[in-house]
Length: 264
Image (cartoon, rainbow, N blue to C red; front, side):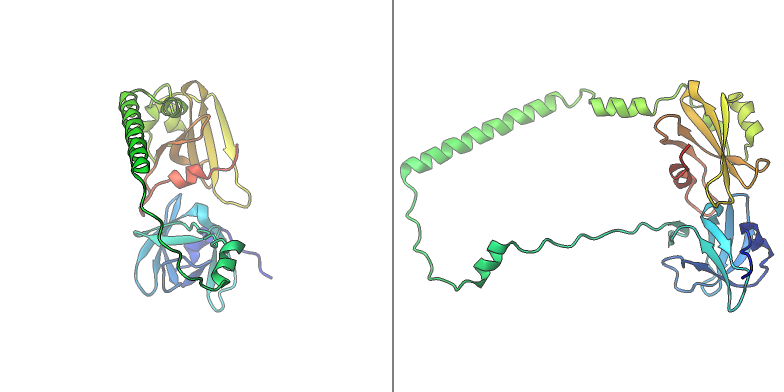
């Protein structure tokens, strides 16, 4: 059996059509043609609808070397087309309703008895007791409202902790763009305390992390090799929350890539 080709082989397709596996959701006709590519994305066009779509290289897997009856390009994740851009498809699991309880089923099976006689009207004492109970409930509700409004302006502990988790020494990373290389980052932010190279399992895209622990953030670059890495965003050093991302040409941003980075 022929060996599968690598992702860059899509450049040699020319006008030959191919199909994605699994097929992209919300697309009626699964036949595409290669248009162009960048260091992080590949642009394809649907053969029937003419719709052009950018697909991040991160999601493109192996390519079949045989083209009979058609070339097959594997996808590492199931994708769906929404708003002119592709996104990872999130399967929603629907829970089955709980079966009826045995007592309810037994009651439904029992024959219908004659209607019970109406209850006697409440006495004057019970009506007075009920009114007193309503008054007490209204008083408790009014007291709770006063407490809520009194503490509305006070900072809540969870809000303070969330802000602390995302606090950084500066926001110089906002000056970085998708064209910045390792040298561009070092020129704008200074040399990092540590560099780390991450290669996901069976992936052709690599990530380079530039650590700035004294500033509480890590700059992330991506590319097919060390010479081609470019800036894709910044994450918090401890919580790994996304602080900054790069907009993609086909719509969306690199935020989803940053959230799914391999463990480091």
